[in-house]
Image (cartoon, rainbow, N blue to C red):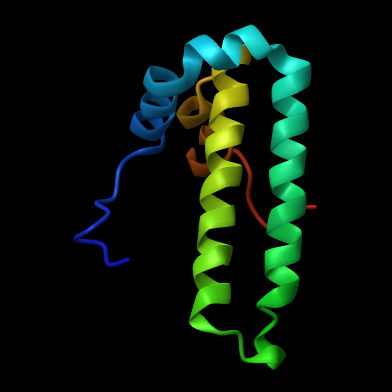
Length: 106
């Protein structure tokens, strides 16, 4: 996809979009069930990353799948944050605010 087909949005706007579309179902599922969905998507991302190892010369279909799995992980993380009452944009300020986290992340 090109950026003209998929405009860039802020993290807060993305989290809000996920909340607007899925919050009723997600909140009914609760934190434990939603966390399990997130972990399942992380597993699918791990598989896609292995399939797209640079030394394998991945196909366009494999790269498209990798992109989809990254999106799924971000969506499920946003869902989990919504249920837990966490603003991801505020949370990532840990890395964006001057003087908070600097140097190597361990």
